[in-house]
Image (cartoon, rainbow, N blue to C red; front, side, top):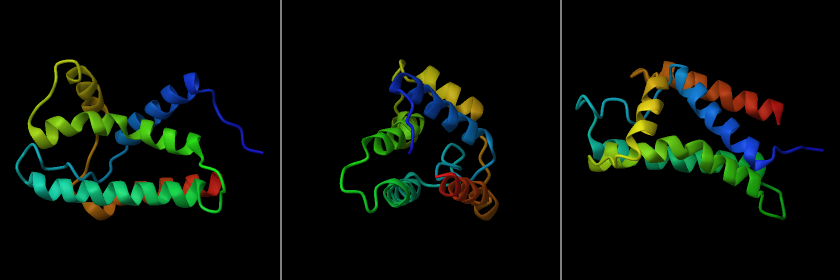
Length: 135
């Protein structure tokens, strides 16, 4: 029988996990935006693809075969992406509300990207495998 954390505990744990995962060198669709090595249109298309893969994996891991919606999994998945969603206006619209700037700076302080796609995707694939194995 699976147990779930109370949302008061789950939200900070999920957010902390996002920052911990960003600390591990990984490939990121936004790598190169600030230096001009990647166009915003390319990053946006990659981001949409990455979101589709993420939602597909969430569905496959925690929703497939279920008769009821697993709200905890979908809520956790959304919360886990919030730091990236908060960066979107800055990355794609060149606009950063003052209230979001400190959160983006915190996120950036943890972020450790690599331009090498193969080396950068390896930690993410390993993480998904570990999640599947622990599930």
